[in-house]
Length: 369
Image (cartoon, rainbow, N blue to C red; front, side):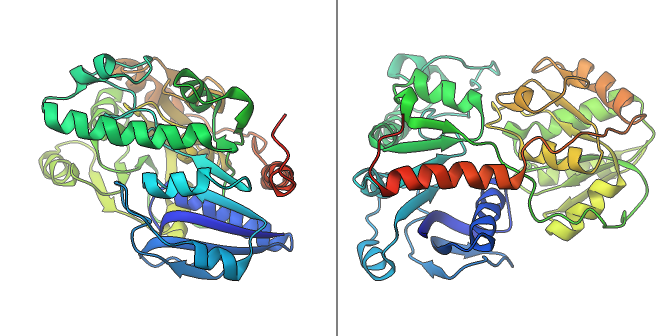
């Protein structure tokens, strides 16, 4: 089968691209012919298939991109769109009966902060002008972003098939009018980590992710401090809160805070080997939380807030109410004293098989049941 994968960018940062590359690798190993087209290539990362670059695919606003020539030359039986938010590209895909879209974040149904409000509360309301306006302080900017999000959503509603990583994401899409019968929940699997890696330092508590408010990195630091655990906190990631974390690290009088920046998958494997607990206090409603199942695959317990899709893979011990820093601190203190042994919850072959079943339906223009 020939599958054209369309993505905003090829990057070594973030779970969305890691998931996509895992899918492509699985398809190629199964003997299928894959090709990837992206808007940009960031970092030192390669794909397991030929790659084309079409600048503009990575745009957040509507930018028309000519993909028809690539479609004619490659002749894909299926077009799989990943993590694209350019509404012009989504509209192009929605007009094709053999295309499906994987949605890995909130940008087609939430114009603001990822389903948590400006006031710091969890949002369970459907997008709308009156619902979303309180999350913005600039009226003109609100109108612009809302219109853009509504345009994306209209294209999603017109797609023949949509896949998401969690039931939580399916519920959010159904809430804004995407037909239930067109949505498939296909969870991710762990990809490109080395379970034979050696730890690259002494035991630690680990945070992995973008250093932004949505990921709760400052709450992770506070919970680690309150936990009383005499292990360093290692932070793997970068973002606008990096300087604040470095400042806290310099002022720390207890166990150190190590701020590493982005790390390679090999280095991340060594960090998992080092970790005694992973802390995952996502303030935005986590679409899935791939980093959690990665940690589990190394026997590392996860202290997490009940955010979005996290409860769908977390076994419960160490999962605490969303927003509760004190409960998170207790979960960290308990987690560092245990290891876990869990079977893989989402085997790669099962995921690839489910995708291929959906691809075949699209190839024959069969509507999903």
